[in-house]
Length: 134
Image (cartoon, rainbow, N blue to C red; front, side, top):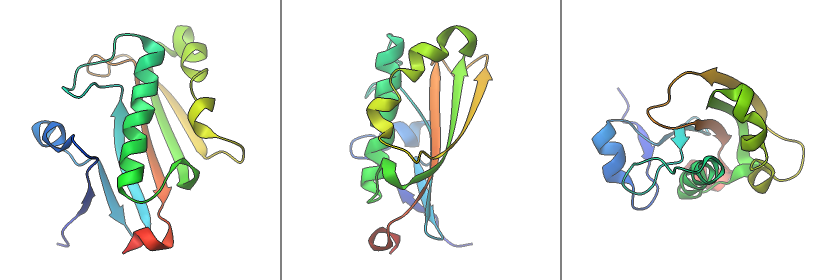
């Protein structure tokens, strides 16, 4: 088996090791990013919903940057929300702060009942720029 090409954002490797998963893996010109939540450095949830969403995007942005790419390289997004009927509009007010201009990536939104104490999670697939594929 080929060894996985794992990408770690600065300062959070212990958190991923404790939870036993990789934050992102480079493979065949793509970056597959694990779901990111609005966790503080110690792994605890950010209590305010919009602040939690911003922190999830900031955590995602740190992984993308560590891999040599950014939001413009994201091609597919999956978001998970606890109680989307009451929280979607509040969450979606934050998205334009990070997403930028159209064309936007593909998106799948999933309502869930539990996210380990969080209310929002985002996972993406990004196309690595040529320079970042090595």
